Image (cartoon, rainbow, N blue to C red; front, side, top):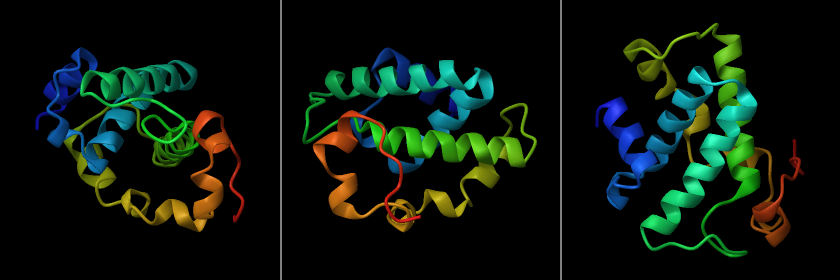
Length: 133
């Protein structure tokens, strides 16, 4: 899916649920982190995910939907990636490189968080620092 179409559909809540993949979460987050100062990017990412979840029939509860700790963990990981690689614009080359990063692997976060801690109501609702690393 083309980047601007992905972002437009995400923002307008018209993105098909099947297209809201693990990978596309990262593409969206990278786009916001490159385009906006980090506090603004975080707000757009967090609010956008909550809004999108509801638009496809999901709920943002203590057990499902938006997860504050996961969102902030990966947003900070992406911000670090941007800074260490000197990324200032979103290009096809940046996107291609992003998709090769180890932090896109679903098990990556388990190196930093225990499952029980990460899946707690507290971690879903509020930022929690890693309990493993």
